[in-house]
Image (tube, rainbow, N blue to C red; front, side):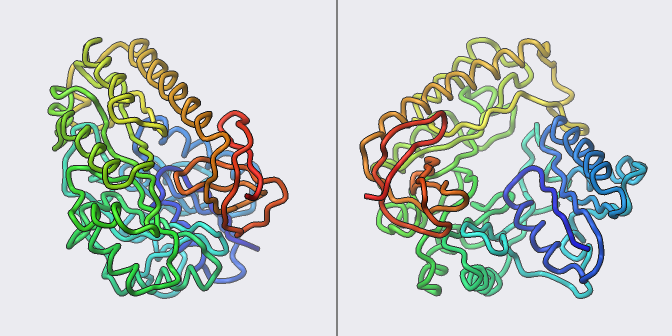
Length: 386
C-alpha cells in the first residue's frame, strides 16, 4: 500500500502535494490528484489524469483536491473514479490524522519547493485562482524557517520559495529572504517562483545586487505587452514598468536571466496589441517564456468580454511560442564554451544558476559545482566538470 501523487499546475501545488502524502496514515492505498484551474485545458487534464490513474490502479482510492476541485466540487464528486473531493482550505489535512500547517517541499529531492504564501487579493479579470485560493495570507517566518531546515536535513541543496503571489508576502518577499538567509547558514541556493514586478520590494533588489546565494533567474508575471490590454486585465503595471523592472534587475545583477508568463489572444486584442507582446520578448530579454492561449474561465470578467475567434487565439499563441523558442535557442547557444555553476538533480541532469537545463554525463545526484558547456542538444546544454 502506498500514497501516489499526481500534481498539475503551479509549484505551490507540488509543495502541498508532498505535505499531503507525507502525513497520510501508513497502509492506506490512495492516489492524490492535486488539480489546477488556471485554464480550461488544465481542468481537462485533471479529469484525464483521474481516469488514467483509475485504469492503472483500480483498487486505489482517489482523492481530488486543488483549485479545480475547489471551483467545481460537485462535478468531480460525480466522477465514478473519485472517492473524495477536498477543497483548498482543508487540503493539507486531507489524509492526515493531525492538523498540518507547516509548508513542505519534496522529500528526498535536492531541489525543494517551500510554500510561504497562498491566496490573492488582486482581481485580474482573466483569473479564477483568487476564487479557489481565497484572500492572500502569509505563513509565519518561524514555520518557513523550520520547514527549510527540515528540507535541508532531508538532503535538499536548493530551496525554491513559492506561493500564489509571493511578492505580496507580509513585510515584503525581499525582507523574508534576508531573514531566512541570515537564520539558516546552510541555505546556499535560494530561488524564487513567479514574481509580480510591481510588488518587488527594495530589500529584494538589494539581494539581487549583492547576495550570491539568491540565484539569478527571475520569472515575472507580465501577461501582455500592451497598456490597454494590461488595463483590461486589471494588471497593476504598465508595459514601461515591466521594461524598467527588467532593466533594474539586470543593472543590479549582470547576467541575470528573465522568464515570463504571457497570455495570447486576450479579448479585444488587436494585431497591433499582439505585436506589442511579441516585441516584449526582446524588450525584456525573456529566455524562458510560458505562453498561454487565452482561456475564458467561468465567472470572470474576461469571460464576458468580446472574445476572439479560437483560430486567431491559437495562431497568436503559436507565433509567440515560436519567437520565444528562437530566443531561447540563441541564448543557449551563447552559453556554449562558458563555465556555469550547476546543481545535478536526477539522471545527470540539473539546472545552472541561470536556470539553463544542463546534462552532465556521469554526474551524481546532489553534486554541485562548476561545469564547462560543451554543446547544445535541443533544450539541454551538455557539459563536463570544469
